[in-house]
Image (cartoon, rainbow over all chains, first blue to last red):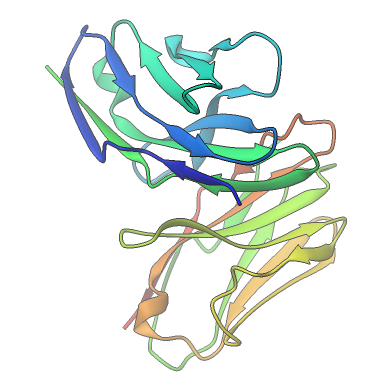
Length: 113
Length: 114
């Protein structure tokens, strides 16, 4: 069975500071990993995904994530955040042959002026 | 494309009433997913369809919930009878075989059962 753990429920950070949102997964098979962002009162939007290949994945809005198989992690990073990055961020896991996601519980990022 | 369309955006109903949520996926997408989001339980997959056929309904909470997809451009999620604990935001998402596993989410329906 697959599972996803997002250790931080809330992360406050000042504007222009770097941020890392942590995601750890558990799976006995190959994984596909995703980060989605949810702005207030909206649906989820894909930030980036890892299916195979390079372990460093770049996404929209200046975000990137690194797939670390030995540590079963897929942490999301941004070198300099903006007020507009305030949102909830979800990590999700899937795998070859299945379109079903397992989502983490989400991390609420609050960017402070 | 207009994206995934959900209606209504907000629904307030009384306990015991029937509720029907509607979803129009992105044209050409083969997969349709229904999710429920609450503060307590986070984002849960209720059911998903492939080519209009239900593939996995293990997340449907109980018999009061049912979902149908009569054609490739329309799906419904019905709750009968509704209960206050069904209050949540319900999302529909769609995906395609050639979409590299990305799911496109609708704006959600906020359901309040009083």
